[in-house]
Length: 207
Image 1 (cartoon, rainbow, N blue to C red):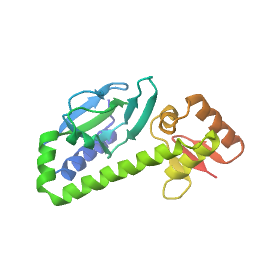
Image 2 (cartoon, helix red, strand yellow):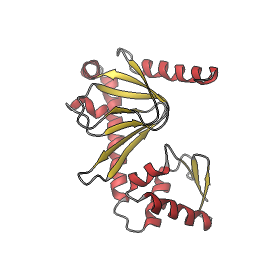
Image 3 (tube, rainbow, N blue to C red):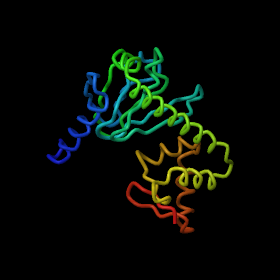
Image 4 (cartoon, rainbow, N blue to C red):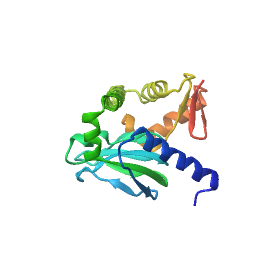
């Protein structure tokens, strides 16, 4: 159950999401930790904005190897590409208790056709996602686990150039950059022992 302050924050995020996509009639869905929002092959019904929690988007190869595409947090939207596909091409699962706003595919396509400003914003967001995926693929070409992890941290650092916010769990970071979880844990421990990084609650700082 949400505390009064938490409920107010969540309601505010829902209102901002609705105002951002004025003209669309959103639905609200709450998910328990581990609950699936959609799975690969499901018929597309629209895209989503996270109001509370974290939603993990992942894809599995034929051999069962997992690649984490994105972990969406509050205020972030995902599955926009589904507007141009008949089925979803990845799995979306709640990492924690989450609330998402759902926007209808048909209404969103109509808005794209008739609202140039909204169309431009959507195009920019999709371009950003493509660049992030290309960056993740480039990281996978780095053979050294140490250099791969450091390159990832540098690329993900915030405005101060040092602090990296960790969304979700480290296992997701490992899947994103193509390392086994135990290799990532060991590498981070080595970097911390060498005082290259400092680890805190939900963040890693480059020193």
